[in-house]
Image 1 (cartoon, rainbow, N blue to C red):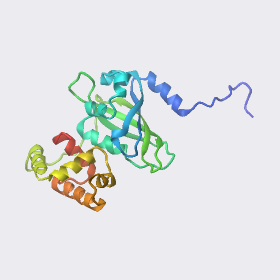
Image 2 (image 1 turned 30 degrees about the vertical axis):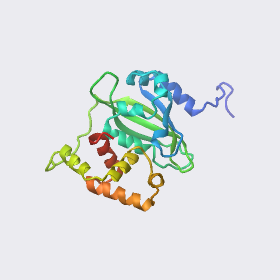
Image 3 (image 1 turned 135 degrees about the vertical axis):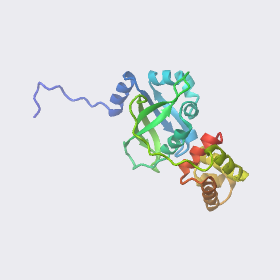
Image 4 (image 1 turned 90 degrees about the horizontal axis):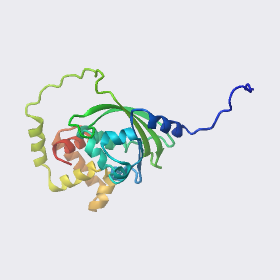
Length: 230
């Protein structure tokens, strides 16, 4: 039996406690929610602290109307592709899994990106296991020492010229499909849009990866955003 001198434990939701901390600490904090499973275009921010608003130079009213476009303004193009894929990751039903990553963000009024350490907690998932609601807290680690990255041997031609040449080899249909992939649409939805079989879309995906000489869809999306203005 507990001593009578101990206060009775209060049943306080974990999310309420985390929100309280997030609103008082100097971190970028927000909650994203999707209305359509796996569709990045349906993503919007449901909660955000003042530190984050100051970081992006926006008001809550302005943020409500921006949806996913707010990330295009502040997230490094290479990291934007990973952000898109992160919202499509499948998790076990009912999970509250936390994932730690780093991301480059550009504060309002500055020209250089800052490196932030992000802690992403899945709050709710759709029936297929993809993210419905995710809470993110990010702290600036720009001035902390970074691990030494392995040296990459120089390529025979500059990357810009290489990808410009690859883009010129894409057909108009492949460019259309690439646009939809970057927007977060899955193969079945793309097939439905063009009224063709899903196998045909998978062949288009394979050709896109082969022509751009990348190894994954994530790398393909990163190249499209960074080099081709997608």
